[in-house]
Length: 116
Image (cartoon, rainbow, N blue to C red; front, side, top):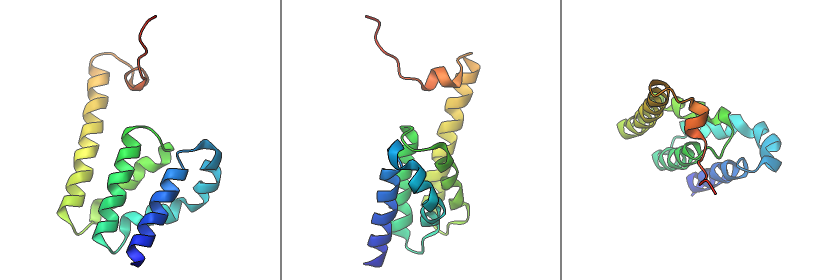
């Protein structure tokens, strides 16, 4: 029961950090949010990681959250490490592709609007 409350609290703070109005306030709790990646309960770590990757891939949360997946380096579960490794390799491949094609990473990440 307590693990569900911890997960809900951490994901709620993650959701609030997507809103610029609350980012300064939520930044005070960054360390507590980060510690969720080291939670003793496997489902908490995995679900929080899923939500974190979802927000990171869409660029919805501040850039400081990019370091949180790296806290899984010493995770006892292989699938948590595999998920983080897959995410990091995908991001790295995207950056390499953008660099190789001569596109700036900022241009590659920017949404394209149809010409009117």
